[in-house]
Length: 97
Image 1 (cartoon, rainbow, N blue to C red):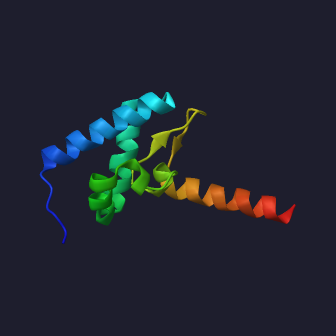
Image 2: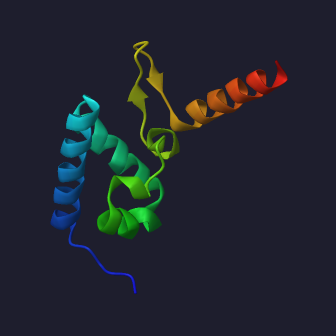
C-alpha cells in the first residue's frame, strides 16, 4: 500500500541522504539534494522506494534522468535530455570501434 508522505518529512529525508552521500563522495550535499529532487520530480513513483530504501533505490546517474538543468565542469548549462543523448552517442562510438 502506498503511503502519503508529509512534505517536511520528504524534504528532511532528502537533506539527510544528500548530506551523507555528499560527505562520503566528497561532493556538495546541496548539489546532491538537487539531483535527488530533480529525479523525483520526473519520477514521482520512485518516492516511496527512496523513502524506504534510500539513495540506492535510485539510478546511479540520476542527474541524467531528472528534470532540472545543471552546470557542468565545463561551465556550461546541461540538460538531462542532452546528457542522455551524449551518453548514447558515446556508447555507440565505443561499440563501433
